[in-house]
Length: 131
Image 1 (tube, one colour):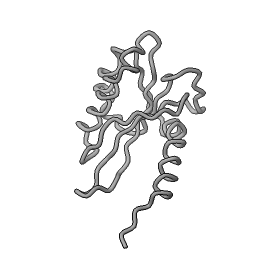
Image 2 (cartoon, one colour):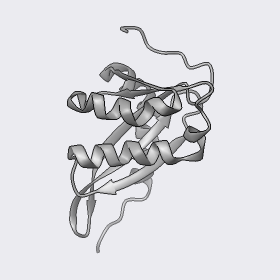
Image 3 (cartoon, helix red, strand yellow):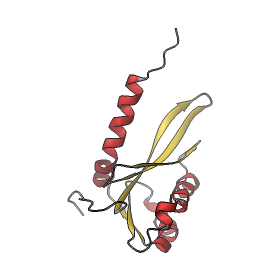
């Protein structure tokens, strides 16, 4: 799948991403999912690491959301750029709801970019400075 996706409905393609954030207690990883059609963002959780357990927990939390529980009649495609070693476990989590899994960094980045740009602008506009 080399071409970019064109979502035609909500939850057709959903990108999972994590990124480092600074907290009072050190580095943490925020996990979010972004819908390609609406750019709607689903905050999943924040973890101390990006371990396989943290990734699987985040995907489980995604599948527990009402929007995904009710999507089995039409399914969704979860787009990841990492975690290929967890493919079997991830598929087991999402298949009951009609979920499919693809690994494609370009598509994941394409879907996530509007969210990441908005977050960068927000941080820029709300920079906390200690004087």
